[in-house]
Image (tube, rainbow, N blue to C red; front, side, top):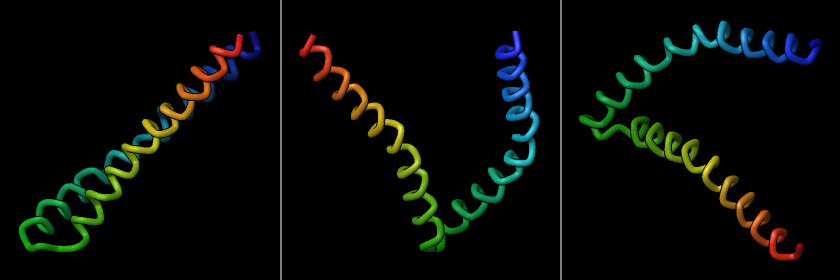
Length: 75
């Protein structure tokens, strides 16, 4: 019972604290739109950062799948 209340409170806290993060999307989009047309390096850096953040979960998942596959054969 206590564990479910704790998990519910953590999820509620995360949902309620994410309200301010939505304000960043418009600014990032504006930098990317204006920077791409002006050949700005900030837009290129923003795109590289997005790809970096996209790649990390896939790399970690691939490593986890590889370790699981290797350990599964030993049993």
